[in-house]
Amino acid sequence: MNLTRQAQRVLTDNLSLEDALPTRMPVYVSSVAYLWGVAALSALAALIGSGVVLAVFGPDWYHLSRVGHFVNSVHFWSVQVFFAALVLHLVTKYLMAAWRDGRWKTWMVGALAMAVAFFTGLTGFLSQTNWDAQWIAVQAKDAMNALGVGAFFNTMDTGQVLTLHVVVLPLALSLLVGLHLFLVRREGPVVPIDSEGRDEQAN
Ligand code: HEM
Image 1 (cartoon, rainbow, N blue to C red):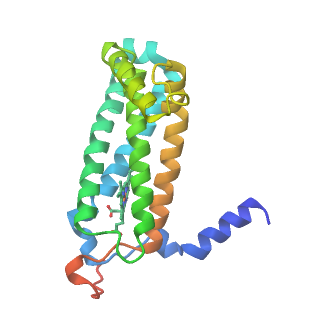
Image 2: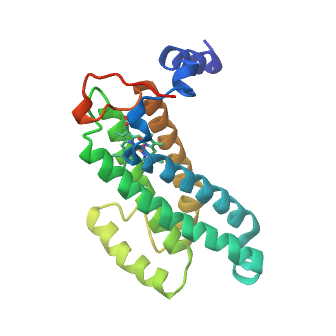
């Protein structure tokens, strides 16, 4: 069987079109508790979009031109919004015990995505190569050595850090977030704890 057929089978066995792009959602989904995941996702889209532009045009452009400064700022502020939304997403899903009814996989993939996001943030900070970044690189090098991963992940190697930040980690994060969303849509939204068993519908 070829790869395309296999991918088709995995998708159609697990996700109907109505699951993937629902036209009706349970009424409790209009609560703010279901908002932060989408907020984090939107910030991630802005982050990746602005990051690609920065990588294509390079540091001279984003340090010295007005438009470059603007795109650089979009990237910076998207990070702030992304992590703020992510923390709110984690806290609300924790308080809702959103891992109920087989959603533990969604939870675990989310946690893994968050860990990858932390390293993407760290390598982004280091890629600035300013004084702050150099200081953090030296301190983080000690931490990586203490963890025993210093031979693979050298925070003082700018080439390695930039490749991780621009290629490897964003790809890994996108794949994990894609899997997270696939699981979210396959399982459907978790019912609020106090309405367990009720099946309310709204447009
Ligand atoms: C890395 C970035 C992440 C993105 C972009 C993201 C995105 C989303 C989105 C769009 C949803 C559906 C809407 C919602 O309920 O808010 C969702 C649901 C969910 N997320 Fe995340 N998420 C991320 C990280 C996490 C983390 C760190 C956890 C927990 C450790 C987590 C656990 C969950 C769970 C359990 C659900 C299902 C909730 C339900 O069924 O209602 N997510 N996520």
